[in-house]
Image (cartoon, rainbow, N blue to C red):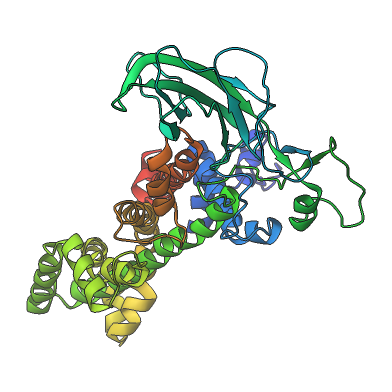
Length: 455
């Protein structure tokens, strides 16, 4: 008799199949996935760190570099970064009475210092008088001698002491002969002078360069105040002014976009969800706002706020940006709302009795948040550049209030002799605009669901 045994069927996975089933991809939220994609974009990540660095420079920098941006260091006017800050201690100034100065032609009576430059010369042949010129550039064949410093209509005075705003550096002095009628002759004598920075014991102690009880004597050296990025044409610290200017520029560049983007989100979401004639009327009004000229309204707002020539127009600029720059955001959000309101979960929520404000706040706006963030990151550099442009042409922030645009406007006047006064604020404007643009580009790729589907 045959015995029948029941076969036991084992359907459990074997080997690699079992291992494959145990492997599972970790669940990621929308924002976690967007952060991973943003980190994979090297340019956007570097731009994010640049933006964070600019914010730290603006907010934390003044706590670390406690220098008054309005304080003037008259010993260091228009000094570039890295310049020699040492000063030689000399005796107090005493008037020069002249004397025998050996040599020929135009010459120095003693070493030139910031106290005075003392010159002596021999009478030029056939000259009835002499005129002394000073220049900060070498004199070429065009005979641009510079500014006249002294004029003598006889040959009895053959010395001159120059004390007009003498700074450390190189000066080019030219002695020109005068004819009988006072016109310039062709006879000249030139001299290149290197001026050394000096100070007295009393001045060093008064300016806080040394302790009041520290012993000093002529021949000693002291160090003047440190200015890492140099000083401007009034002797103000460039680093402190760049930090103060960043507060103004970034306040306008971030505050104004936040306001008009939020208003544009509200306006566009209401128009897109309600639709119909309301949508048409609202969007035609947005088209009307787009057609308004920004500069004209900026001038009108300055008049309305009572801002006179030479006064800072920060508030008119903010009002003009907020009132005229929201339509682009409203159009973008409206388009997103028109797509989202046709989705099935919106219809299901309406069937369950969800109110209009609940649908907009709970379902629609969160789904447009990625687009809004990208719009904001592109609006910020545009606002910063607008502020810089308006301040540059004198319609925005006016001196002495610092902003990067107004500092560039001041620096362009002396860019041939002191280019650092223009380079640093212009460089910060460029870095900020580029960083926010690259960050916005990276956020667009990270938050766009269609980009994820293509990978």
